[in-house]
Length: 238
Image (cartoon, rainbow, N blue to C red; front, top):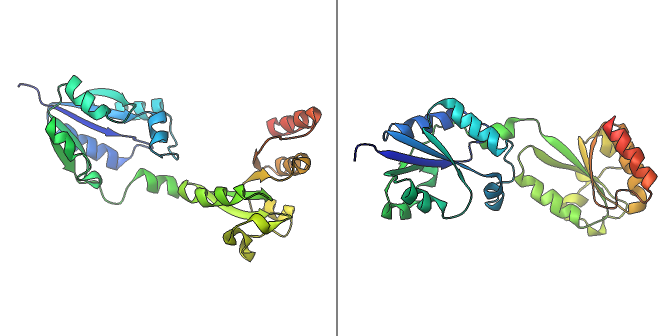
């Protein structure tokens, strides 16, 4: 066979030097490099909910390196086998942090694990960016879920909580350092608010937050009156 085809896959979010070095070394394994970029939907299905760039942004970043001879989109589990067969691939390669994970592909082509560049990763880059402090408002056990799951989202930190009834809150949220003594204190120490208080309180709380320059995520109904919604929409837009 005259041309050795190599294939590799990745998300390539916030493309960095580590990605480029891996692509260069993948290309050096053969004559023709195919790069599979994961789709937004496939990323979400795999639990990667903190990818910051869109699919097209990530594809364009890979293309701009000039290393890939061909770029394809990875959209479903099991696609790697289909791609290897369809594209007549000789070598599959991926970073060494996946060592052993893709040994089953040896039945279809040669598998090579490449050592990653130490000290750089998309996760670290996302973590170094500005953290959004999310203030919590309400009397619902859903606040516990928000606080717990925020730990897995880079760039997001569950801050203090303002609640008129903390009986549904977890021990973490009932801790003194997590409790805001007033709604104003919560605003002062938050960049954005998640609101799940009584619907009758939504209008006043959202209005005060918007006028303080805060982003707001609110469970429905946002307001009880159409005119209130129109007013809040105007404040947010302005």
